[in-house]
Image 1 (cartoon, helix red, strand yellow):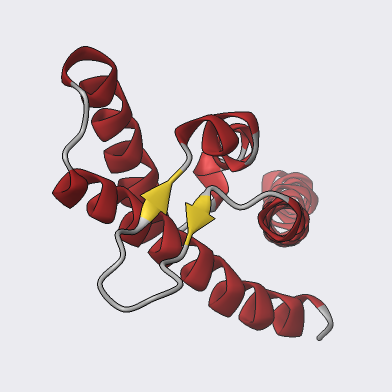
Image 2: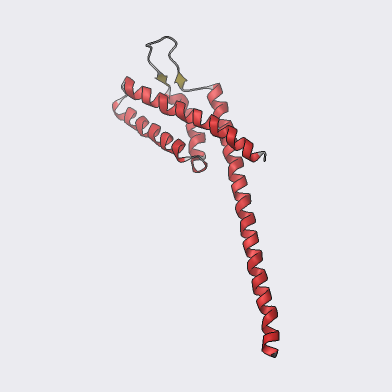
Length: 144
């Protein structure tokens, strides 16, 4: 009986500690998720700001004109922001960023044909569209 009286408070402390640990872990997870969401919004904002100031895309003005992609503007602009925040982005954005870089490496070695420039243009355009769409959704979640 005395042993049971000594063990019961100890069991209560262990159970209380475990419950406290679970609550703290859940709280920490929510804080990290909120911090990542905030960082993602900041990154999206920076990407859209750079895109507005100096886009590497040069759209054809007239039907039949070729698309243009300015690698230097991309490299000096959004490429850095994209890579610094790659871990925050959806895999569809990550895949496109990596594909653009692969094509950039290929261009340094072999040059690019118009078809490949069109692909760079389209990949980058898709990244920007995805950022714009996701930015709206994330801002809504963050404001909740």
